[in-house]
Image (tube, rainbow, N blue to C red; front, side):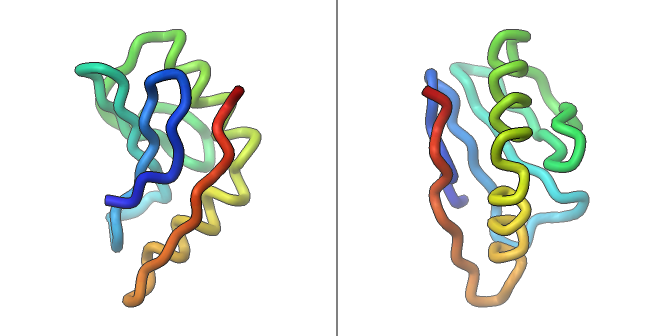
Length: 87
């Protein structure tokens, strides 16, 4: 698991060689969800609405960086970089 970012109690992460479509995972308290990088919509799971909106805004701001991380993590010698949190 590659932790990409943390903000407002939300942890954003991706997995090495994860299944398609391009997505990220988010955890907040006891909630977990998987978000599409392209649309920002929840693919699976659930989070409170306010955290969902924060994550969707963050995805929109950092879409290119997220796609780059996704591509890096699909390679055999996986690497990734941290992305700036919402402030």
